[in-house]
Length: 427
Ligand code: UD1
Image (cartoon, rainbow, N blue to C red; front, side, top):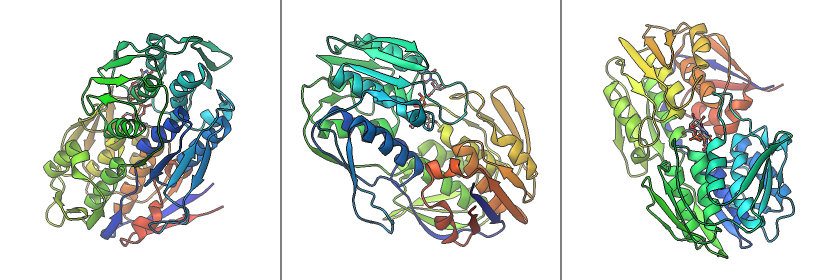
C-alpha cells in the first residue's frame, strides 16, 4: 500500500490548478443512466472514485469513453457517457462497498427501468450514514422498497409519479437521487428542504441541458417536471470547492503564497470568512484567487459545520489541522456527521492539543508540530494530516493513502510544484 513521506517546514509558493469537482462529477455521471442519448462531461477529475463510478456504470450498460489527455493529465478529463440500453439494474456489493455515492443509481434506474437492486452502501467510515431519506423520498414517488440480503430492492411497476416531498433533514445524496428520479417521473415533483450545495446546482443545470425543466435552482425548493425522453447534452463540471479550500488551508498553514487557478471564492464563502478571521489573506485574481499569509500568526477561530452555505463538513478536518498551530483556542463543532473526528488522535501524534467533547473539539494552538508516522482514516482526515505534516518539524509518513487517491487529483505533484518536500513511496 502506498505511503506519503513529507518533510515539513517549507512555505508553499507558486500556483495550483484546481480540478473539477469529484462530488459534482459523480451524480453527473449517474445522470447518464436516465437517457439513451450521449452525455458529455468536461473537467472531470481523474480519481479512484471516478474510476469506481465508471466501473459501476459500465456494468449497468453505459458506454464510457475518455477523451485524450488535457490540462497536463495522462488521461482525459472529458468523459462521454452513453446508455442506449440498461443491461443490468443491479448495483453489486463489490462496487458499492467501495463508494457510498453508488447509491445514486437507485433513483435513475428505478425511473427508467422501473426496478433496481442496489447493495447497501459503504464509503468513508464517518458516522452511521443511513439511506433512509433516499428510501422515503423514492417511496413518495410511488416506489416499493424492501431490504433483502443486504440489498435495497426497489420496484415501481407502473412507473414513478411526481409528488411533493419534504426532506426531514438536508441530504446532498438524497436530493440528487430524487432529482434524477423525478426527471423521468410522470408529472411534477416538488422537493422541499432540498440541499443547496453547488454540486446540486451543477446537477440541476446539467438536467436542464438534457431537457428536464428544473425550477428553483440554488434554493431549498426544487421543482422538476418529469419528461419521457432526454436530449444529447454536454456540461462542464464546476471546480472542486473542497480541493480549493484544502489548498487554501495548506498555504495558510505553511505561511505561503499561492494562486489557486480555477478556484472560486464564491463557492466557499463561509470558509473564506473563517480564514480571514484567522488572519489569512484571500484576494480574487483573473484566473482564480490568491491566498497568502506572510505577516503574523494564525488566530484561533470557532467553526461550526452546516449544510451549504454554511461551513462544509468536508473542510472540517483541514481547518482543525490549521488551528492546531493558531494562537489561542478554537472550538470546532461538527453538526453534519457523527464521529467525524477520527483525525484527532492522528493529529495528536504530531503534537496537536485537541480535546473532544461530544460533537465539539477544543483545539489549543501549539507553537510547533513534530513529524510522525500517522494513518489516514477517511478522505478528508487524510488530507488534514498532509496539512499538518507540511508545517511539522521533521519527517512524517502517512499510511493508507488509498483514501487520498479517492478524492485528490495528483496531490503530491501539485504540492511539490509549490516547493513542498513530498514523495509517494510505492510498494
Ligand atoms: C455528500 C458528499 C460528502 C459530504 C456530505 C455532506 C458526495 C459524493 N459526498 O455525502 O462528501 O460530506 O454530502 O456535505 O457528494 N443522512 C441520513 N439519511 C439519509 C442520508 C443522509 O440520516 O438517507 C444523514 C447523514 O448521515 C449525515 C447527513 O444526513 O448525517 C448529511 O448527509 P448527506 O448530505 O446525505 O451526505 P452524502 O450525500 O452521503
